[in-house]
Amino acid sequence: MSRQDPDFSYFNEDGKLVTGAAATVHEIYTVHGGVAEYNDYIGETYIKEFVREHSEILQRGIEVESRRKKLRVISNDKRKLG
Image (cartoon, rainbow, N blue to C red; front, side, top):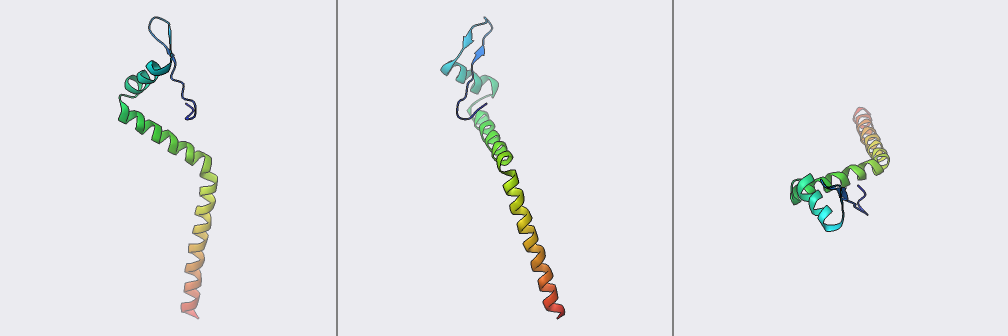
């Protein structure tokens, strides 16, 4: 599902294509079980997509922060010993 262009079209039991508001209502209430569950699904999807797209940047930031913490600990120990 693309967040920019959600298409909830489906074929009903009679084989007819259902689109528009009817398809959206079907998606929210039948597939997801209600508005709250649908909103949870959208939020979860957004977070997963964000992490997937930004994981490399986030990982680099974590590595830099980790190196900084290690350097601080080592430099503090040397001052105490010296």
